[in-house]
Length: 228
Image 1 (cartoon, rainbow, N blue to C red):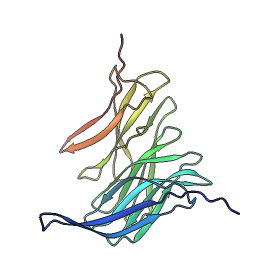
Image 2 (cartoon, rainbow, N blue to C red; image 1 turned 60 degrees about the vertical axis):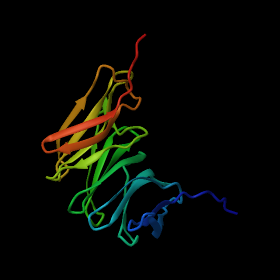
Image 3 (spheres, rainbow, N blue to C red; image 1 turned 90 degrees about the vertical axis):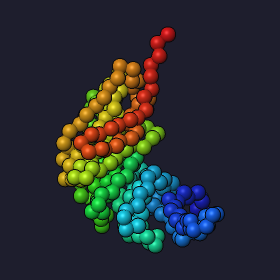
Image 4 (cartoon, rainbow, N blue to C red; image 1 turned 45 degrees about the vertical axis):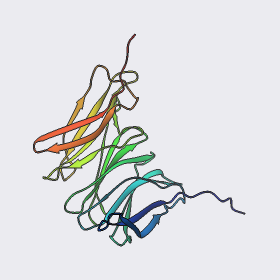
């Protein structure tokens, strides 16, 4: 007899809110779920909706052969799955942390792998991978926030901005990390901010990015060393 095991499905539920009365009425329009190839714990991380009402969900989905992968799913407004795209870096677990879409229907997801590299992937509106970029060097590996979300935003020109953290060696200071890619996935620039009070490896990282014209604002989490 095969052993049974619990299966956690990635689920999306849509409710319709009627605001025409004093007491809003909520009615369920549809519910759907996603079960990955491993029948395991498919965990949603981020969701967004485009101007046509299509829903995009990204999360982590394990397989027997490749470990944890990014999985990104598109549903139409009626809740019918349009496509599901997976991303796997060879020999590593891949943990997606953020999701963004542009006006042309391109989908961008970002996160990190178990080696600490920051990974950003672009799909077109049909879910076909256009490019995947990995950022990191052995002595200064950028990584998405350990237990938080990695922010990703797109400006009016189609440039992509990804935030995370960079830790410089064991026991040394960590820093904020901000990367700009153009629409083709070329790295335009990388910026870091390191305060003398930042601690290494404990979650200091950019959490939010806001673009206002030619200005970029970032904020995040800092763990502070207190000397007594």
